[in-house]
Amino acid sequence: MDFYGFYIPEMYIVIAEVGLCFLAFLFGLIALIIAAKAGRRSKKILRCNEGYDISRSISSYYEKCAALMENYQAAEERLQKLEKNSKAAAKKIGALRYNAFGGNNGNLSYAVAVLDEEDTGFVLNGVYTSQQTATYLKPIKNGHSAFELSEEEQEAILKARENYTRIINE
Image (cartoon, rainbow, N blue to C red; front, side, top):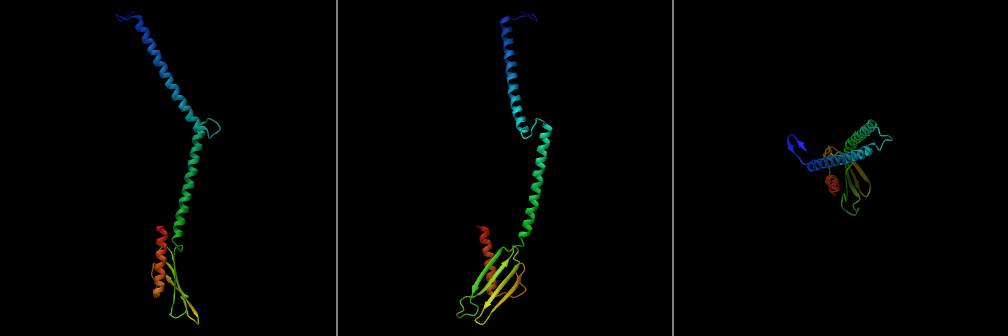
C-alpha cells in the first residue's frame, strides 16, 4: 500500500488497526468500570429516598444537616446554662467534729462548711455543752466571712477545699 509516497506493507496496517481496536476496547472497558462505580455511589446516595431524584436527595440531606445543627446549638445552649448554674451549686463540703470545752463530752461539737465553686456559702458550727447546744451560721463570700471564724470553722473550710480538690483530681 502506498501512503503519501511511502510503501507500507499491508501486514503493518492490519497490526496497527488491531492495536487501535484493542486500545478502543481498553478505553471502553475503563469507561464502563468508572460508570459502574459512579452508579453504585449514586444508588448509595439515593438509597435513603424512595426514588432516584438527586435534587430530592440533596434537599433531604440538607434538611438533616440543618436539623442536626439546630440540635447541636440547642445542646450547646443547655450546656452553657448548666455550667453557669453549676457554679452556684454546693460543691465543697467539709465537716469536722471536735470537743469544744475539753472534758468528757466526746467530740459532740461540729463545724460544717458548705461552699460553691467560688468559695461562697456558709459555715455551720454546733457547740455542745452538757447543758445546751448552740448553733451558729456564718456566711462565707469568696472564702472570707464578715464574722470572725474559729479555728474549727477555718479547718472545716480547709477540709471542704481539700475534699473538692481530691475529688476533681481522681
